[in-house]
Image (cartoon, rainbow, N blue to C red; front, side):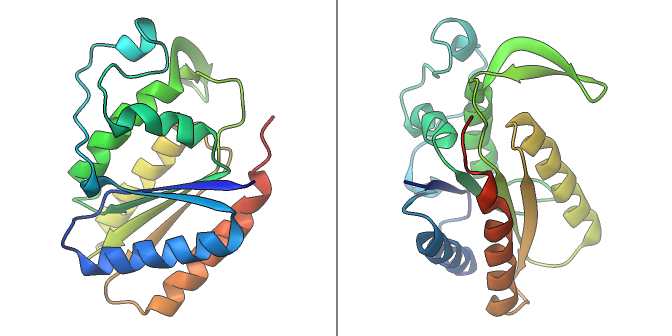
Length: 197
């Protein structure tokens, strides 16, 4: 069974974001047997308290008992993960960032490694983590914000050990068809990386 996970950090009252989520969900349903679609505003996810409990007290599991405690297991069991977030001053939405901060640290080990000239944490689990599609929802096509978001996504793809990733943009002024083609192409390209080692 091939699984996908969608994490949507869009605003509750944003109808365009809901349309994007529906488009992504329907395309994934056609290509994967299981799709977990987590819309973050439906859940009360608390911010990281920085106690490092998920490193030492309860390795790989946050001590805060909410949905962000469960998402990392869904993440590593998935064959593809999709992030959806409004582009907010070139970054993620606060809702998405809050959840992602909790998730990412549970996927990493406290042990360090040297990679590409930088020191980073090692992956916690000795498996191939899933490929990643990151979708930024734009109000306008400001290239400085788009470039910042692209770089942020690339750095975070590295931190969640994605073997492959794609960054897409859904602009409110573009037609739905062009975005549908983009997401279909990205899913097709990344589908081959679903096998776990």
